[in-house]
Length: 92
Image 1 (cartoon, one colour):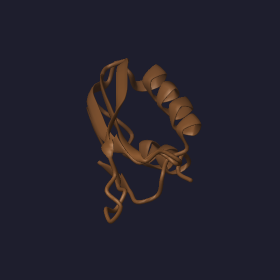
Image 2 (cartoon, rainbow, N blue to C red):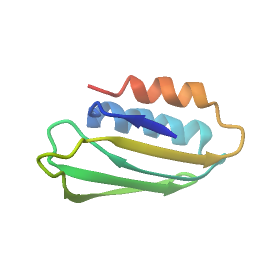
Image 3 (cartoon, rainbow, N blue to C red):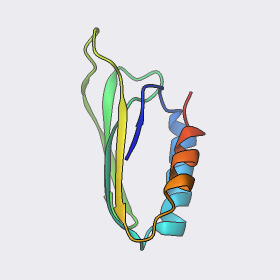
């Protein structure tokens, strides 16, 4: 599981996730998350299976709510440290 109170840069995240799916797509059984995207007042919901990924906007963040991104990856032989470092590089 990956968790951060910092927002994601959407372009960096899209590039990283594309590379992740290209390399580890067959090993990723399931992944999902609620994302705080820089400049967006709504949650972004991401989910996928193997190399199929989708996303949509969710409800608006409440004014007094902490904007926390949480991602979960379920798979076989996934390098947790590489996933974590890569996601951290996508944060603003």
